[in-house]
Length: 183
Image (tube, rainbow, N blue to C red; front, side, top):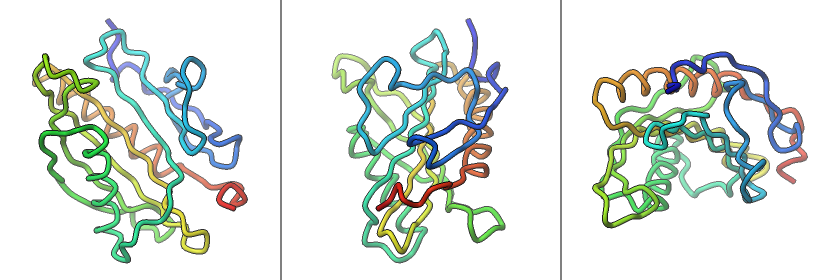
């Protein structure tokens, strides 16, 4: 069975019709090829054959949240994801940024989530990373989120490490090519 860790080859992928580009794992599948995706989102999933190990990456164009402090804004988006996931618990591990003012503020945390809201199954811990780019003059928050769940503690830690590296690579490489996307 392939693991997320096996998919480290990346390529520059166009998002939103090429208005944004980012380095993503070449093997990750564009969800819009097989499922409806909202116009304000780009969604990619790892090709892992075990649905419990599947990782996903979502880039969303959202209205700017009313939080001037970027740390509070990225936490707001993390909690919004927790709400959308019907998470039983959510914990922020840390927030940080790259040493470049044009880069996003980043967050990593965990959420306790039931897969697809199935009450018959126990909730599983999901590791989530969030990156926030604030497009001030367009009143937009560009949000990238990546998540991975695991079952075995050792496998989960290995997968989280690899997916964390994938997240940081995507966040470092993300480039807005056409600001007309936010018009």
